[in-house]
Length: 130
Image (tube, rainbow, N blue to C red; front, side, top):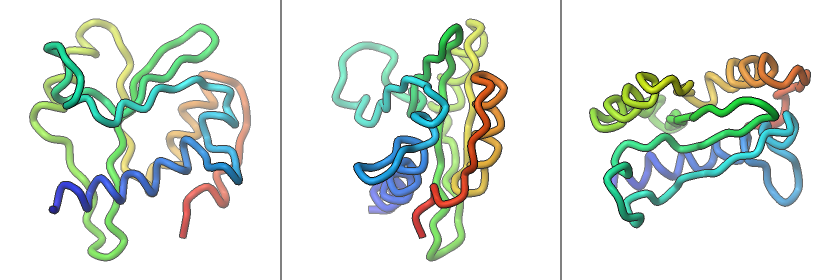
């Protein structure tokens, strides 16, 4: 049950990144293609445990983004599990860029990071649902 609640907070904040039917998200505003890997436990293979939430592709770059959400009722922030830390280390050891963002706190930092990749200036005002 706790895991499901944490995922629900992450899903709420994911709309700031992915957008909704009524507004664009940070990825679209920066013209970044993304794949949200939301159910890797249903996939097959040896690389599913601990996979980052997003694969991001820009014009000439690729990166991974893990998001953790802050529970607005308790104030607690999600934490990386051991299998996530291990997977992320494997990716960085192979030369991949992996970011972990604690949302909503790090939304501006994610925006700044994407701006260094895309050169596009975006305001994050209004992207996080209240």
